[in-house]
Amino acid sequence: MVMKTDELTQARQVSRFSAFRRFLAFVGPGFLVAVGYMDPGNWATDLAGGSRYGYSLLWVILLSNLMAVLFQHLCVRLNVATGLDLAQACRQRYSPFVGKFLWASAQLGIIACDLAELLGSAIALQILFGIPLFFGAIITALDVLILLALTRLGYRWLEAFVAVLVFTTAACIGVELFLAQPVVAELLQGFIPTTEVFARPGMLFIALGIIGATVMPHNLYLHSSIVGTRSFGLTEASKKEAIRFATLDSTIALTFAFFVNAGLLVLSASAFHGRPEAVTDIREAHRLLDGVLGSTIAGTLFALALLSSGQSATITGTLAGQIVLEGFLKIKTVGWIVRIATRLAALLPALIVLGLSGEGRVESLLLWSQVILSLQLGFACWPLVRMTGDSAFMGNYVSPRWINLLGWFATVVVVSASLWFVTDFFIN
Image (cartoon, rainbow, N blue to C red; front, top):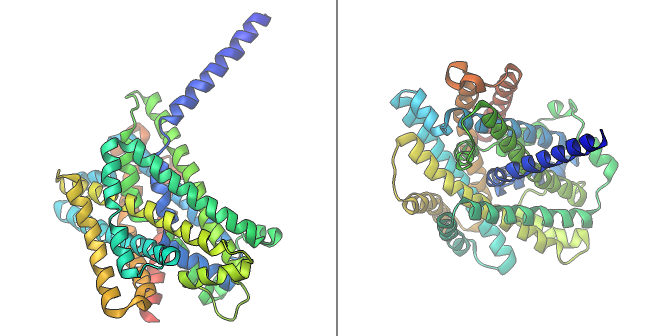
């Protein structure tokens, strides 16, 4: 009896180890996706939210992250069930006219996203090395060469490189928070939703900006494609296991993204809340941090986190451009041509604005990139939720009703937040 019990325990341990090894095979794509949720486009809203309203909007960041986890799960479910990424599925399910419209929308969103990452990295280079933004943007654009080299070696190398950048960003923010010493009780209270946000227009605007800037449309196309780089069986059991493991991978990675976004808001609240004017400019925040936190490395760590965030996000954004082009238009072309074209499409407007208007307009350019992104968001969320809830298309892997309802709720929230953000931008 004892022998049988020992054998059963050993068998369970072997089974757990085998499952863990299978899970490790799915680790990687989540980190490529996570960088889009902590890119430089989020920094301004996080800084403004913390400096103006303290820890009060932490629950909004948590809500945004939970919605991100849901959308990325639907991306995984779509690919495992159908073998298609979101772009390919849209081309198959919609008319050629609608397909080309969705492609144009997605491509515009990727260019806008790439513009924000490029400017964020250029700002970091200026802070760290004093390089003018104009030349910093050119230097940053060359990181497409890193992408080309890593993709030639395989996705695992690319995923490892991006994971290092994600950990670097999180580590820098972690040290900053240690120096800031936030009030833990007030911090925890910030995760409790309140109706105060609806009574204060300025607070509501920033909350909507956080939601609209967190969920990135290009991430839905990217994740629904790269999850297909993993090998899994064709049986129902193996596909369900693939959905479970790939979802766990993206959830763990998005937890790091949540830490960075929440950490930025907490840092801003600890360092800047109570000042006469809100700190929304990234360069101003860097300038003030050393004095406020009493450490000469605070500003440097802030810039290093920004650079890591910007570089990782530009790499994944450029990769998403190729996936969108090939998926929607069924155009198979040399990868480096697509990636360089996407990078130039983001670089040119940045150089024109910096050359004609000077560095003082960079914040305006960043804001415009977020407005454009917000306008594209619904064109990615809506088809994703609709298709993964269609039993005729998904078969046995159709989203359960409760997940589908949550998906529609999240879509309505994200699209409403984006439209409100855009409307307020043009009115005011």
